[in-house]
View 1 (cartoon, rainbow, N blue to C red):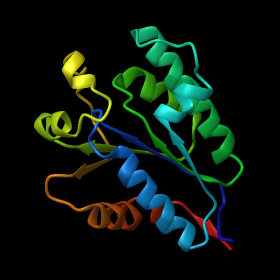
View 2: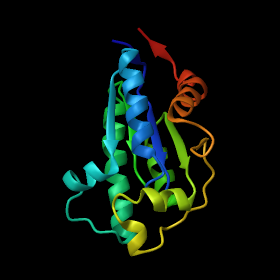
View 3: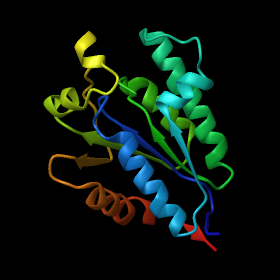
Length: 167
């Protein structure tokens, strides 16, 4: 099994329905095929298990991201590639998490609001307008122009090779 000298966290963020989990699962599969140790922290799954009882206020959303970040840090320091799929609308809390993880790659999955509204599996867009955040990101994946396969290739070619590997 291939290992990183120190794990890396790839944090997929974007609007609900943008395709974060879809891309995350695809990247996970490709990395496992290549023999890497990989764990996925999906925001919805973490919220149901580790963050049960938290609501959707700004404070609760920040605490949810802190907890995901803490688990990602624990896994990464044990040579695991951690793929996080979470809406993470607030730049400040993402920066806080980034400071705790030595190798942190942020990926903004950019899908138009119209596309997200069409996909609205959770019914969030019918309830209210999504919170938008302006953010400076390491890598932008444009779902409008790139298939999942091209997005994965872009991530693995540009981001992951910058982390040292050991056999």
